[in-house]
Amino acid sequence: MANEKGLADDPEIKSLLSPDLPVQPEECYSWLQAYLKNHSSDKDFQELYQVLNSLMYSDGELDSQEKELLAELVNAKVENVPSYQLTLKCRFMSMMLNSKFLASVVQMKQSSVVNQTALVTGYYTRVPYQVLSRFSVNENNKAINYELSKLYLTDNFAPIHQEIFAENLAVIGKLPEELQGTFLRNGPNLQFQPLGLYHWFDGDGMLHAVTINNGRASYRNRYIRTQGFELEQSLGRAVWPGLLNLPRFDAPYGLMMKNPANISCVWHNGQLLALWEAGAPHIIQLPDLETLGVQTFNNKLASTFTAHPKVDPVTGEMMFYGFAPIAPPYLEYSVVSADGELKQTVPIDLPVPVMIHDFAITENYMIFLDMPLLFKLMQSITGHLPIKFEPKRKSRIGILPRHGDNRTIRWFEVPSCMVIHTANAYEDGKEVVLIACRMDYFNLLIPSYSDSGEITNFDLETLKLFCWRINLVTGVVKQEVLDDVPSEFPQINNQFIGRKSRYIYTSRVAPYMKPKPVFDGLIKYDLGTNNSQRHEFGRGRFGGDTTFVSRPGATAEDDGWLLTMVWDTVWSSNLSY
Image (cartoon, rainbow, N blue to C red; front, side, top):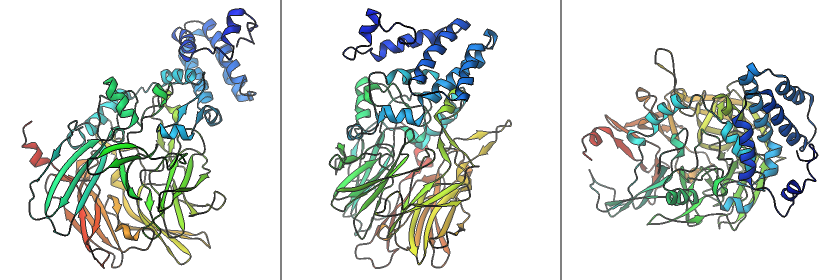
């Protein structure tokens, strides 16, 4: 801008342009804010247009469509201020959210993974992001926020702030003598009043551990002490918003997003790891649940880390992937050896950034799900959420040899759908078989209402246990519904991961409780006989996902126990606090 206006040689400006004395982001931000606060005349917009025009020219030539858009800003009449304010915002955001631009300023370096998220680098990077954050105005915030607060900040979703240790828990019935160990659950547990829209997936990670030994049980819960958690705790307030908001592009403390480590856990190479899906794992010490730090695999971790890695029960290898919602590569796949060494990372090309929550493995292949749940950050300036399911876009199943590269992945198109969790996959001759819980669409468990107040969508009602058979020779994909009863969180005996298994366990949806995503029982599927058994938790009782534990010395696949945690609404309603 200084060069265009012939001011670069002015002594004061020249000193600001010196590489030894860069303009601080806060100062640049105040200059831009001065422009944005007063848009009452064409003169203000003309001047701002010149600033933005010079910024865009610095990254290359404008195409004809971009020039036409910018020309509208200059030619617009004063009475049309709202329309060209929106045009200005769209153009500015499209420039700053361009993947090539982001790739140049957002670096996924090893140091950034250690700090749990992408660090914004460079003297001038924060400036446009601070403006972008001001441009993000969700007009639907109040209505959506009210519904989400009712769903995810009350009843069983309400946060628990107290950390306790309780021994000799009351046992109804008898605990099996052979059942020994610690049953762990990880989940979101909000520490402070949230910023912006709050979703179930946003709260700080809290571990709940029930240790069973010699017929007795004890309980302990503890927050996972991530960097973001400790920073917010020291300040006494929330700093980073959640999934349904734009990231903190101004990157306070160097972080655009907080890694809450709040989804799941995995045990590998003698370590317990607490997981999120857009950051590094956290190492947890047993039995006190102390957070020891992040796992970077000797600083080789250069991507995010899925919440659902797969550990091969035969080789001991752990497979995982990381997706990126902002800059490419949008998907990266990695293998960790049985002794904890990160052996390879493979970038996988995707046309657009999509949310991928789970995947599957077979003995020789990795199976990735490219479903139409897209990150669309630009939508936030028009009052919509930055994540959207697009049903007109086809879904794809990608199959990659376990130790292959990005040239060896094959994609198979299937009708548009969404898969949150897979059950298992295996090879059957020339076919790869994938079993998962499939839904017709996914609106992030956010309800919509008709004018009469009725719920018009409930994602979980469309769930079905589903099977795809993918012929690697002919390319033909056959699909089959295994059960119409809506259920989720499919689990198997983990000794059969990647191999053909007979039994699958799922949690049955309680549709009469909609829009609350709760589950009122378990289903055991026998794929050998095509039969199922159901276990209901009982009136007013709701649970989540389950874990299968084999009986010591068991020879049958289903010889063992299912463990889950249950919310008893009848019992809890009689408690006084």
